[in-house]
Image (cartoon, rainbow, N blue to C red; front, side, top):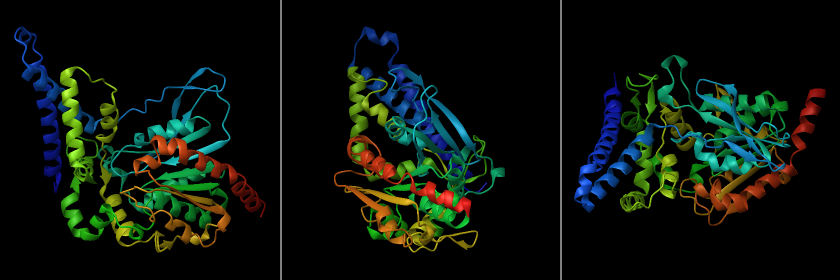
Length: 422
């Protein structure tokens, strides 16, 4: 029962606020109040509508919302989201377009498991779906995974990525966004040692903390200030009886959301007060800018406690990736063994999560890779979100990434054939 009471208390508070919003909306919307128009009732109804939606979306997994796609033939084709590999903690999804010719580039998009669902990369998927076969890691909410499924830490995550790479074959281009960048690098090094023929053609690391100490941010400062004991006592809780993962130790998504909001609390407070005013004036919409953003931003998932704690201890505090000391089941994973996979890093000049310098550190670790297979791109005015979504990604970063893939499309295949012949 340890920590289960606090988990249920957070869920109770969330549920109560959702109910308060629904109650206020229902009460202030009674037809009888229309007899005596009063701005107070309009404001109360608007507050209730925004509040109910806000707290409801926290436990709702967003939909991908990618249903049709216009191809070169000028026709709209349905988009089918198929499960290629099914695992307890993650599924590998494929965005297939029936009726469209198979695209030359095959991209594995590694989504972050840092509190949000993989749908955070929806716009990234849409932009790549135009002329690529797109696959993505769809991490599961830990509260929905039974305790019988076992543990899941950074080593397990790395093995998952290696398995997905092997399943897709050596003609794959891997794009890791933010948090999984160090583990995607480790997974590639793991394949370089264990199964060289299965290595991807290229690896693109976007805004990842390869070396968190290379440039300090609020995230890295927090990791340095607290001890592992403090983290376990204050951040880890047991899933309550409401969900299938009852009893599983997790880092709750609601706690992660609270930390996200606290970093820009004034901005979020203004956004919600402005939205209440828009709703009261009848200027809102179900898919307006506010709702599109917060439907995704507020939808959070729980992380397995082992994954969260081992990430902080081994990636941020121990710097195992940065120092090339990462191990899996006691065996050293040598990043220097990567010698034929082209590697590119992407950083944003205004990134306050993974500051410039943290991701490019990966290139120094690739001692066995020729310089002509290494590349870094710095987007001067982009923040953390902008390096994988928005105009900076669409107009500047995406073209450079796809060009890098095309320039290195044949290398891995030749090496794979050579190894197979040997």
